[in-house]
Image (cartoon, rainbow, N blue to C red; front, side, top):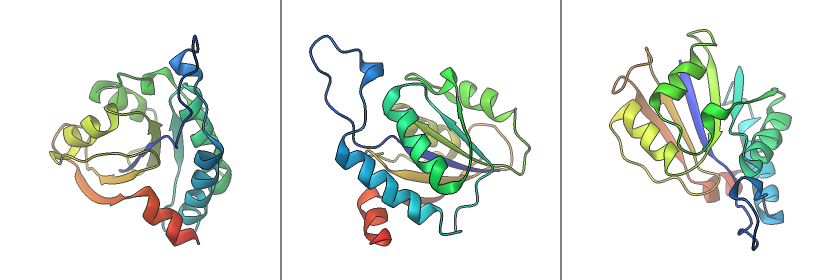
Length: 158
């Protein structure tokens, strides 16, 4: 199974009284995710499933990537802030073992999930993409195949 972990794009700061879940992508965040979607749509990233946190910034990111990749977005509370390995395993038990599944979520959850899958510690800036290959859904059995910095992906699209 190939897993893609994407941190949502650049989001607005919370306005006074605004719920964190309602924070949207900034104009810059939208533009950058659209460019990253072009890179992903180049064919090097075949995708069969796209899951998103229900928080607005993650859902917006997933929708932009889904449009570029022509894949429907499945919004699931399992990817909300605080997602753990068991949540991801539950989500992935819905897809075939040969799936290529992308999950759009949040920090620090994504870094910790990548660590649980691979034993490798990584940082995930807004828009970062990590690619993991795993034969089974068990901690420590995955291999980090790539980690894409969002700035590099935007440059690749230009």
